[in-house]
Image (cartoon, rainbow, N blue to C red; front, side, top):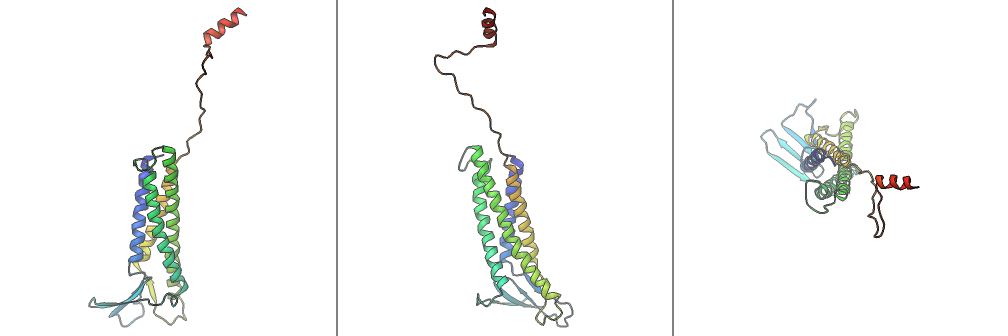
Amino acid sequence: MSGPMEITGFLMAIAGWMLSGFSLASNYWKISTIQGSVITSSRLYENLWKSCAQDNTGVFNCREFESLLGLSSYVQACRALMIISIILGVLGTLMALFGLKCTNIGATDETKKGKIALSGGLVYVFAGVCCLVPISWYAFNVTQDFYNPIYAGTRYELGSALYIGWAGASLLILGGSFLCCSCKRNPKGYKYSAPKSGQRIYTKSETSQSKAYV
């Protein structure tokens, strides 16, 4: 296993997991646009859990989404995928800690640790995909409503949480890939057994002498 690549991948995956969690908790998944609006004294913003309004004095009021079934199907799916991504990030972190070459946690055999690190890298990649899909899906719906000429509701723009989520998903995928690439398969060697009792091992000189007598 390549030590520097392994450590780099682990740190990148940890950073990506933290950014994904911050993106999930952030309020700014979408922000109301001021383009073409005369009244700019208040801004609306939403995330997966609540909708908020803020005036120009900084005072804001938030209302949580009370009905789960009343939400759009893509919002429900985004919730589930983001939670799965966070859980997979925790699982990948634990597996990577047991599989890192520089740690003495768990197995001491390098081959076993390599397999554990490889599994942790794959879990990180899956966590990144589970984060990338809802972020991109949510951004697609916001963009689609923004450019829809017959949409009569409030138009929103992409919030900062989406960009943070994209960065977190990218780091998770790259970090997991680095962990997977750092685990190299050791070539299989041949094992020689010791000679049994009563057997004699002939050297090259002794073999040539025996041929001379013949």
